[in-house]
Each structure stands twice: as C-alpha cells, then as structure tokens.
Image (cartoon, rainbow, N blue to C red; front, side):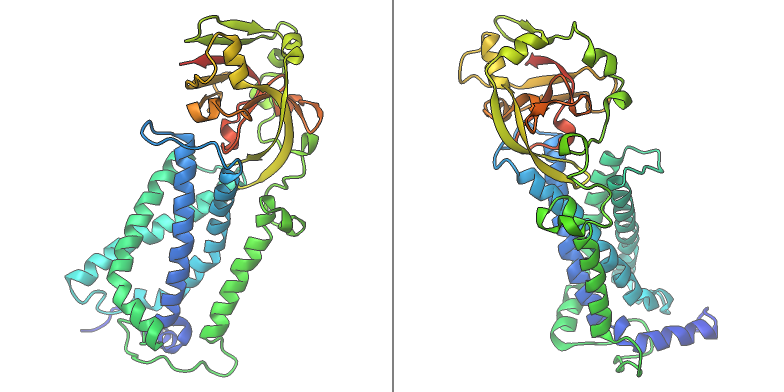
Length: 394
C-alpha cells in the first residue's frame, strides 16, 4: 500500500527507527518509570482527595501527624519527576505516528484509540498540576474536581495500555531491543559516532528528572531545602516563619477579625451552647503541640502551636468526656471555598486538635488566622480553617 507521507518524512522516520533511542527497549524502560511515577502520584492524590472529601464508611486516622505531609509531598514530587519522563517517552515513540498502515487489525486499532485519552490526559494532568503549585489558573474549570476525575481516566487508559503492551515490554526488557513496531526496520542499529545512544538518552532523562526533583522537593523535604531553586514556595519564608497562601486582606476579614466584639460560638447539638470573647479564650487552659501545616501545593513546614483543644471547648458546652461528634468549623471569611471545614470524630477526640492562639511562641498573626485558627494533625492545609468564629456540633 502506498504511503501518504512525503519521502523526506519516510526517510526521517526510518532513520529514527534505527536509533536505539527510539526502539522498544527504550520505550519499555521509560514506560515502566512513568508507570511507577503515575501510580505513586495517583494513590497519593486519591488520599488527598479522601481527606478533603471524606466518605462516611471510611474513617481517616488523625495519626501519624505528618502522614499527609509525606503523601502530598510525594504526590507533587512524583508529578514533577514525571515531566521529563513523559517528554522522553513521547520522543522515543514518535516514529510510530508515521507508521503505515497505521493499524494492523482491530486489537491494534483499539490500542491506538486508547492512546488518545492516555497521552492527552497525562499532558493535561502534568500541566495543570504544575500550574496549580505555582498558583496560576489560566482556565475556567474547578481544578480539584477536574484533576481528580481526569486522573481516573488516565489510570484506566494506562491499565489498558499496559495490558496490551505487557508481552512486548517483557520481551524488550529481557531480550533487549526488538525494533520499532510498524516501520521497515527490525533491529535497532548502534548509534552513529557522536550520536546519543540508549544509555546516554536514559541517563540524560534520569538526570533531568532528578534535577527537577532535588530543586523542588526542598519545599517539603527539610534536608533538600538549601537546593530549593525552582519550587514556587520556600516553607521557611513567611509571616512568623510560616508561608501564607491567603492573607486576611484577600479574604476580607481584617475588620471582623480585629473587632473587639469578636466571639467564638460553640453551639449545635450541645447541652449548653457557649460564647467566648478573646479575653476569655486567652484565659483558658492551653495546650501546645508541634504540628506540620501541609499545603496541597506540596510545601509543608512544622511549627509550634499553642491554643485550646477543641474537645475541651466541647466539654465546656456540656458534652461528656469521651463523646466525639463531627464538628463544623466556620470562619469569619464569607464565600470562600474553604470558609467551612468539618472535623471528623477522630480529629475531635485528638488532644492536639487545637484552636491556636499562638504560633512559634508569638501571638497569631492576622494573616495566619488571628484571633483563632484550626490546626489539627494529618490534615490538609486548606482544611486548617483560619479566623475561626463558630464550632457547630452535628
């Protein structure tokens, strides 16, 4: 069958197919690395989604206190590390785009169709994920929802692709290069003098992935903090030594948070609803805890918080000791996506779930949630509600 491609395209395709950079072994090794990165990214992202959108039949523990810090750090790190891997993978298989005939049967046709959601989905996920950690949103859709559902599409397409390629991958890894499918060359030739071979190509890809990882992972890995060159946020830079994502002025709470008439209300399903002014709150027994604040964007930092345990406030409102209901936490902020959050019974019963008055030994800064902010173990930063004004017991 006559090919529709110009002679120059056919010649370039065939020359590329002879290079070990474009053979099945190279593609298989990169595919394995991508599969590992995507799996880690998916599982940790799924955990983050579960924390932010809990389900009634699965309780999320409050300990270890830094679990979310680790999982979300891995989520962002694995996503960043996957960027060079994906680019290298696409480069290694691009000659197949010009194969003729494009498919050899129904099975291969289905495989090629499934490549569309796989490639488009991975590119979308890595682009939007990178934009999110930089807090750049050049789109109109709601990022968390889109990112979550596209991840399922990508993993489904990846599972189907792996099923179709498992024999080819096993053969390529065990026996070496087997040639590029769909082109006129069977065995990949050694690289020309001065040309990049398979080992050099894979080493360059690994180096690029490692460089991006080392220069961004410092936003969550303290040992790498000195190498934080490309991370959008340094976790040691910010008011009181802790970064601020949403300032009080941006949230529109400066006047309400500074108002002498401020009150914390504890009501809902309690025997004796209570209301506390700031002086009363400051006079209550305090508890101190070193807890991390971990952002969905990948940065995290541990800090020393001092405040009132939520369970102590509930007991002041008449709940018996050991009774741990769900509690809605309301902010002075109005209309924000995270102006209200929910504490699970596990978090309510945790002594280190605090309404903090102090951060690192100093009164809480307005941008960090003055007069009160929630801080609880193993919880995303977006759910650590600031400028707390009300606890509602369900």
